[in-house]
Amino acid sequence: MPLILLATLTMIAFASNSLLNRMALAGGHIGAAEFGTIRLLAGAVMLGVLCLVLRGGIQLRGPARITGVLALLLYMYAFSTAYDALDAGLGALILFVVVQITMFAGGLLAREVMPVRRWIGSGFALPGLALLFFACFTLVPCL
Image (tube, rainbow, N blue to C red; front, side):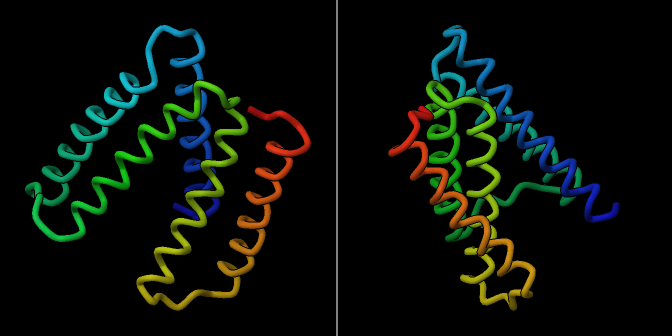
């Protein structure tokens, strides 16, 4: 699949994730912790199925597993809790930027060679996120 199509599908998935979070939490029908737990369990089942189908088994050992699990738990519950107050569009924007910065930082930590385009993209993303937070918390009550 061409890169533009994959990027577009990824952005649609992130935006859909934000809309589903907001819809679930805005009506007060479910709490953030409960919704996060449902998402976590559904994701674990799907990941298990993918590992079985694509790799023939599930590997639960390794030192990086604990870090990954803790990071996922933090993300899941923080994201669900944030949607009690955030608009879906603002949440999606924050998520897009944070994911890009996280992937860039992960590449740097893994000592990957970073092409100029990635530096430029991160050069826009990080100041953009800082500007968004500055605007939300000082100029306009975004939350």
